[in-house]
Amino acid sequence: MSKQRGIHALYNEDPQQADQLVWQRETPLSRRGFLRGAGLSAMTAAVGASIPFAHLMPAGLIPAALAQSDRPFAIPGKGGLTILNDRPLNAETPAHLLDDRVTPASRLFVRNNGTPPALEPIVADEWRLEIAGESCLRPATLTVADLKARFKHHTLQLQLECGGNGRSEFYPAAKGNQWSTGAVGCPEWTGVRLRDVLEYVGIADDAVYVAYEGADAHISGDPEKQSISRGVPLSKALENESLLVWAMNGEPLPALHGFPLRMICAGWPASVSGKWLSKLLLRDRVHDGEKMLGQSYRVPCKPVAPGSEVPDEAMCIIESMPVKSLITYPKSGVTHDLGEPLPVRGHAWAGDLAVRRVFTSLDFGATWQDAQLEQAANRLAWQHWATDLRFPSEGYFEIWARAEDMAGRSQPLVLPGWNPRGYLNNACHRIAVQVRA
Ligand SMILES: Nc1nc2c(c(=O)[nH]1)N[C@H]1C(S)=C(S)[C@@H](COP(=O)(O)O)O[C@H]1N2
Ligand SMILES: [Mo]
Image 1 (cartoon, helix red, strand yellow):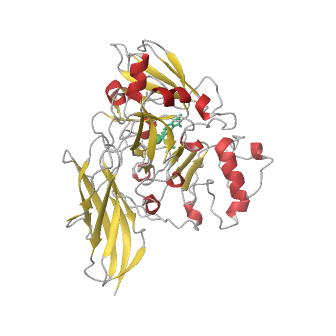
Image 2: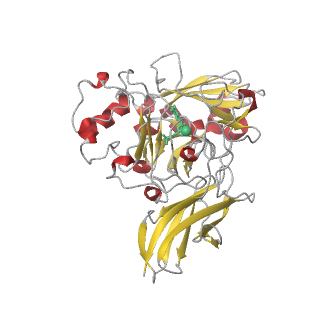
Image 3: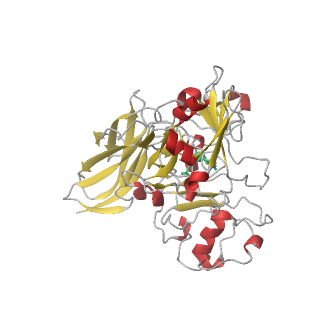
């Protein structure tokens, strides 16, 4: 794969190809026992048998059974996703598999920081959510059944995008999952408003932040540590679209997406949307949990030169995500007849804002045509766009898409502000088309 900096590189999306298996091999071979929870069940399904010595397998080892067959490693129920890491499990969705208007569970990316809780003993309605913190007036524990019974239900389409989506293109490279374009999706969620629950327990005047803790274990197995514990300013938590949800697309939350309860604060890095939600904290300060501090989910407050070392004090917490779009049809590499118009479509989103225009270009950005853009189903859902493109001749073309938000900000053609952890790459997406006469 030749790497083109500046716009999302064309990548091989053929699941039959071995290079589809992008494995991180930074983990030292001496680390044992990596196949746990979802990682083990996925690997077991992939090799078609249980793995008695799983606890002895070196981290990052691709089973020979897979290396020698053309059967791609897959997470059960997530066919076609690209696995970036199995411990913790991380998988992204090739752009053409994100074509659905509402993202089905089978096509939603997975981003785990730790080991998900075992599903077996969990009865959804009995799951307990503790609500506490310095600024909580009446700390309480509510079960999922209580949430369902006491508060009004809301169903919304809300988009989630990992803050590190697009990281693979930054140069100098940033450590972390090398997401290309697929750590994004927009399912429909059902639950109650976070605001209604917070008002029920009482919000003290000095409350400034709302944070979560989840029931997943830290990857080290250390019971004292959270895998991740983040949050949002009170104002974001109180928005109509900030929800505590138990259902996705009309079904109970899938195990990998936080069963039986998760938080959704759409439009911000998806790391604020806590899965396997066990605790909510009303904080009197900016939350200081795991992955809130240091360089996590932060970018330099002022732009820096690529490769710079940035001290922690000069890093600011990421809030609303930037404007972005994807081409989800056709699949990159398609062959098309010159005489026919080519229908092209995708989605666009812009953090807390709406998208006001989407453009496409066939000539490497020299000229741009307006695409038809739909309104969002509701605030913080992605918007669908479509256009029919006619090609001037046979040959190799690229379709580039570019969205612009309500504030007039556009996606860049080149890589946006380099940052040490490789967040917020919203450069234009592009696909290849071979036009034949
Ligand atoms: N408890 C818990 N919540 C979590 C995470 C996690 O590892 N544990 N990962 C976060 C991150 S970084 C992202 S991008 C989203 C991913 O959501 P998904 O796996 O449902 O797509 O969940 C967020 N919530
Ligand atoms: Mo993330």
